[in-house]
Image 1 (cartoon, one colour):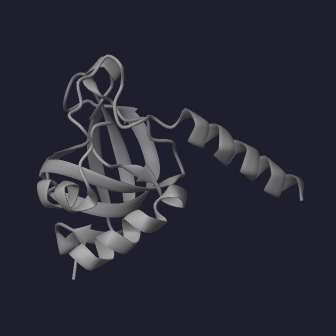
Image 2: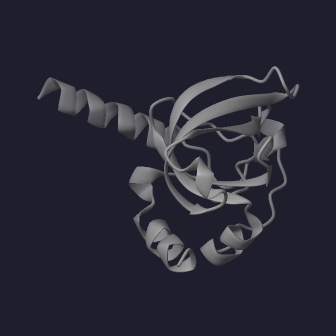
Length: 141
């Protein structure tokens, strides 16, 4: 029972701290709908955060290592694999705050060697993504 209460409390804190679609310092255009975000993204997937670290590859970015759980759009070979997504490390550059061990619906642009995402994308923690997933399943048919 204690573990359930603790898990619920941690989830509540994470959801309360989850970044909104735009930060005061960064300039996101108005958040688009699922269809537009899907069409603009190179990959859309559900993933579990395995590791978060400063990037050695690209200065000013964090590397987020995801285990792919489901792919809606992108390279099918990534299924059941891991992928690194880069997000700016600075909030003024629209960084997105991922949390280790949590699952997300992720929208990323770029190429396989350098997929990126920001708080301006429709990234969302999985627990809050029920309607999002229904729309994504329809788009990915």
